[in-house]
Image 1 (cartoon, one colour):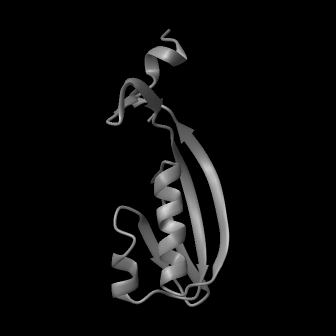
Image 2 (tube, helix red, strand yellow):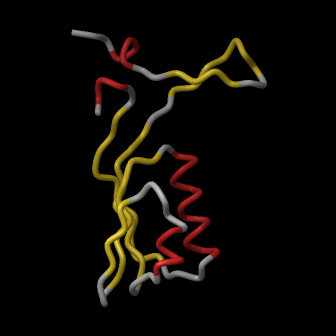
Length: 96
């Protein structure tokens, strides 16, 4: 069995090559009020988008920066955020 350290995916920081950070992706379900039009849905490329009359679900794997990017897009589009739920986690290629 591999250790957590062996499973971690590390990225080199260009400003400090000697330091590395762990890339942790988490599986999120993000719900916004109302349906999205096709142009709005395109703004969330990489996420699964399911719209209905009640709302829209955005589902996918995101690291923390990606999550904040999605939340920024939701705000920029003037959408009403209903819920953000973390439903899973992976910290390396063996956790997929």
